[in-house]
Image (tube, rainbow, N blue to C red; front, side):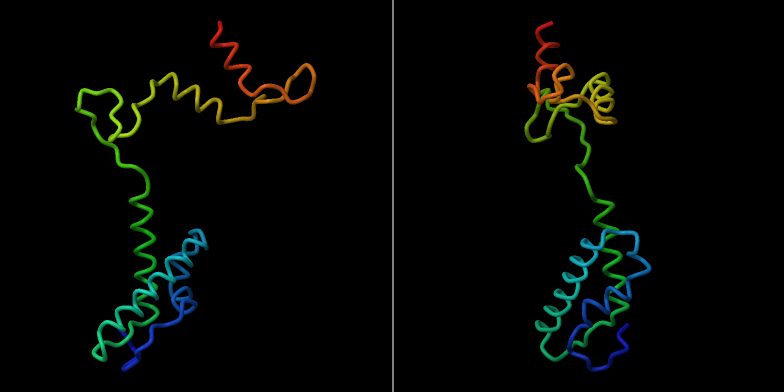
Length: 139
């Protein structure tokens, strides 16, 4: 509810951020700021489109909307899993084919730590990036 009877301008982004601080403190500050600006911009557009019939919503209301939008965005993040029933192993509209368990384990093991990528152990200088993969493919 708006406690600003007759106010035609939305609260500032700073006031909305302050109102939502408790609910957004654990989130990325840049994302929170961008969403706060969008919420205030949309409120400004709503007021402009309404003529003189609407009043601005309070910073607390917009702060709750900001927190709700961030939560909804977080919940919807990432691609949606589907069942590929097309009969085609790699279907371009469904993304990539799933990796075998052994490939997933190998990728995870490689990503969990540091490894020699370009450094040549014997010379201590930069070497060819794909020499290990090449050796395994040849073998």
